[in-house]
Structure formats: structure tokens, C-alpha cells
Image (cartoon, rainbow, N blue to C red; front, side, top):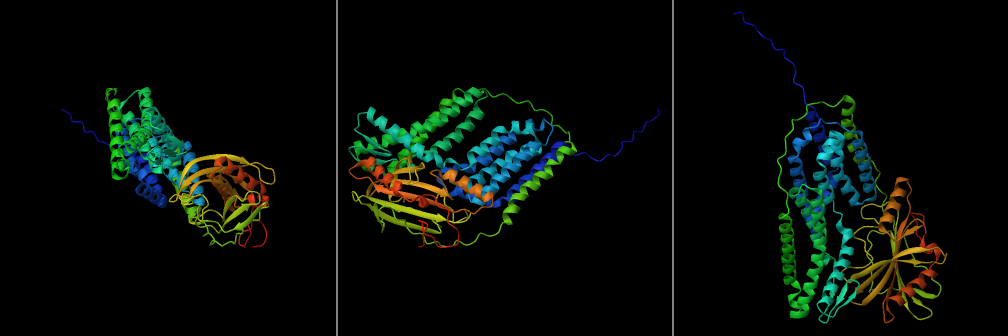
Length: 523
């Protein structure tokens, strides 16, 4: 028998497309962590020091676990690097850079986490992004500390639910903003009573539970909606029961440690009931078919996206490092203006004291009306140059009142007309403190553009910074106590004061580096 010898040619092993794509994504992710490490540390600091977001330490591991479970579905399609992903990376890098310029943490934190799905799109393509949509979206939505803006609205909703429940059960009650008055005591729905911690954590758990337990989108949407509504109603009922206990058995049972223990027990019971209710409607688990992994290698033109992504990731931190150090803050001498029809400026009392740190100059003064001897207090703080750490107009540390001495009852906006007859929208805060109730009107100015909104103020500052313009920004605040005439009389008093306030004071763009008077004259 003739033997046939078969000779196998030695060919170099060929890397699969997913091996190359996985390596590219891993390198991009390492570059993201290394280049934006300061933002990573800032995000971890918020998670660790703010009790509202301590749950967020669980979000990245959970997202990674869900993505790992979907790895076979991802590898079933060949990687297709997308130029749209490159565009998304460029946009998010720009958002991070603007946030860095303005020293705002939220856009930096958002850009850092949103860059992960953008890298998936850029390195792996649309198919992979669609498969990983939930774990990636879960990471971005619940790992970014965005819930501070919900505190005020949740306080208002909680107060109204509690008061309505007290009325239905026959308890005499009076609602004054966020202040609830009953025969036993005056109760304040403070920031800690807003329920924002339970609301966000329950929302995160509800989304994960709906994703794991249900296959139909209708069920998922219904359960997520319940996970958002139930904690709000539950928090209102918790405040209701707390007040009811205090009115029935005494304040010692409704405050202190008893209050905390009751709150956690109540929230825990509500959460268990929500999850048990959802358990009875769960869908049957269906085994996933594992498709073979694709070995197709992306075309060279598509692979060019990978190095471009690395260049974009490095560009923004490099540009930020090359920025010149900001000039030191030069102190400005700001003088209180003279207002016709009002005697002053006089020394301001200590009943109301805004806190604005790092201002180049600020002034506090009191004025008395020539007609009825009513008192209006004025506060003005000036910031020069672009926002930077320790010298930023709008920040969580800067407040229009001292939270240790007063509580916010309600907020609103008012249209006023200064002396130039142009309409100006101001914010109105109604406070309650040891010295009584008080109304505060405030607005911010960037150059000659004035607004009541801190967000619009930030956008105006960003626009000036991107144009290379160094405009001056400031905050104006007026205060009047609410006496026997009520809030309407205090509001009329503030409006009369604004009508006499000089136009150059309301919106003035003073040159930087000199001493100035708020009225535009010499100090």
C-alpha cells in the first residue's frame, strides 16, 4: 500500500476581530481612567461623603456583571467601529473640558461615565451598543450624582401628602410652605425629610429588578413607574405617621433615635412589599441561545477609529494641563449704593447672612424707607475672571441663607421693574428662622445679563469663557422680614426698593483689577 504523506503548511495564527476590538477597547478604557483620574477621584469622593449616593458604589459592579452575562450576544456580531462613536467621544470630551474650565463637577462626572458607552460604539459598533444598552445606561443614569435638584420638589410633595393625610384623619393642621403646624408642635419638612435617598436608591433597584424579572417591556415600564411613585407616597406617609405619633403620644417618640429607627423600618417594609408584589408577576426565564463568536476583522478604514479615539481622550486633559494658572483673586472694594427714598446704607443686622465664599468683594447693608420706616437689607458679592476652584459664583457651598439658622419654606419667581423700566425676573425665597419669617429676592448677573437661574448663569459664564472673554459675575440679594402685614406687604416693600435701585447697580460690568463702587462711582 502506498502511503501518502500530507504536509501542512505553517501559517501564522490570525487574530480574530473581537480580539483586536477587545484590546482596543481595553486600551481606550485604561486611557480614560488614567487621563481623567482627577474626575474619577472627585466622583468617588461624592459617593463616599454624600449619603444620598453611597449606593452608587454598587452600580459599576452590577453593570459589569450584566455586561458580562451578555458577552456571547455581543460577540455574535462582528465588531464594526463607528465614526458616530468617534463623534460622541469628541462631544463628551468637549463637555468635560467646559466643565473643567468652569469648575463644575456634574458635567465632568457625566462626561466621564457617558464616555464608556461612547467607547463601546466607537470600538465595537452599533450592534454591541444595542446589546449592552441596559447595563451601559444603568451605569450612566445611576452612577452620576444628579439628584440634588430633586430635594426641593420632593419636600413640597411630601408636605402636601402628609397634610392631606392629617386632614383625612381629623387632625387640625396648617401648611405654610414646608412648615406643618399641628396642635402639638410646628414640624419642618427639612432637606433630610425629602426622601431623595430612598427615591433614587429605590429607582436603581427597581430598574435592575424589572430588567432581571421581566421579559416584556410593558411589565418593565409599569414596575419602574411603581418604583418611582411608591417611595414618594411612602415618604409622605412616613412624615404623616411621625406627626401623628408626636401629636398622640408625645414628641419624644417622634424625634431622635426613635424617629430614625421608625423611618428605616418603614422604608424597609415598603421596599420588601414592592419586591414581593413584583415577584408574583415575574416572567419565566428563557435560556439564551449562544451564537458562535464572529472572527471577522474590521476593515482598515474602520480600525482607524481606534487610534483616533485615543487621541481625543488624551487631547482634553492635555489642553487642560496647558492652561495658564489663573491670576490670584484681587480684592475689590464694593460700596453699597445710595437709593432714593431710602435712608442708608446702614449696618446690616445678623438676622440674615448669605454665605458666598471666595468673592473678590462683597457688601451688606440695611436701608429704611422714608415713608413707613420699613427695613430692607441688601447683599452683593462680586466675582472676577473665569470661575475656578475657590472663586466660583454658583456652587453648593454658596447659599443665600445660612441653613443652620433658617429653613426654606417655598421658592418662586417674580417679575419686577427696575428704574430703567425693563422687566427683570428675580427668585423669591420664603424663609423661617429663629427671628421669624423672611422674604429674599435674588438674581445673578454675568456682565450686563441678569437671570434668577443658577443654570443659566453657568451657561452664560461658559459662553464667555469659550469666547475668551473675562466678564465679571455677581449676585444680588434683597431681604425683608415678614411682619404682621404678611408676605404681600414684604413683597411690595422689596418691589418698591428694586424700583429705586440704580440701573448701573442692577447689571454692571466693572473692569477687573481695580477698586470699585457698586454704584459705579469712586469708593
